[in-house]
Image (tube, rainbow over all chains, first blue to last red; front, side, top):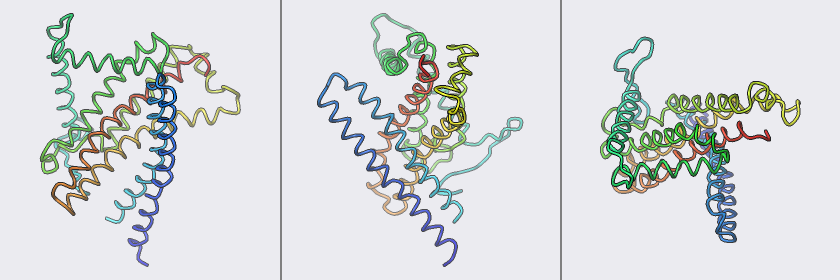
Length: 76
Length: 228
């Protein structure tokens, strides 16, 4: 197989990092909602922490996206 | 030019090539400065209009960062920087969304270039070091590298390098990814469908601006906290 095709497959696989990130974000969001519903007075704190956790999870997903972009840039 | 990204250099300022992203940032800085100047020119005790809006933003960010830092004087010292991060990144993210901007050179969001986000992240890193130094002094600052035990030294040093890397990649990846998706949808379906992603982009732009400022705040908070 030619190199460009392999690169395209690699880019596709790299973006699969969104799979795990999606699951993680879902769990985080669900637990945060649960916490806020149980104790509405910690709403502000829980929301801030949720966003920070989202950011950390998202970084890993974005790393995959970055690799995909780099591969696409090499493909031309 | 890749996917509608221009790389034209207008002129050189000494060794620095000035391209459209730098010019866009200058315009944004002037814009924010003008709005801030206009809103604080005639300050009143009971605020109206622009002054009201600005006070709302400042008080909201101050509360948010103060809640994370939990030390009054640290929050007072570093909130101006973090609020500036928030405002600048917010306006930068939205500058790619002006109607017709994808056809004019120079209206690409500056934060979709990794040089810009890397600069912002480096400012954060230096701010974290200065905050740690001024809070604990030289001894305390060096001691936090070997806490909780000396074996953690390499990990603590590595952390100082991964923080700016993750800040850089997160902001730039989000904005660039969203722009790429819009560009690709524009290529396939030029009507209406890209608008849904742009609506999502408004949300993402605000959240990413907040996340950058929040993470900077939490890094500063962990550098100045007593137990670290």
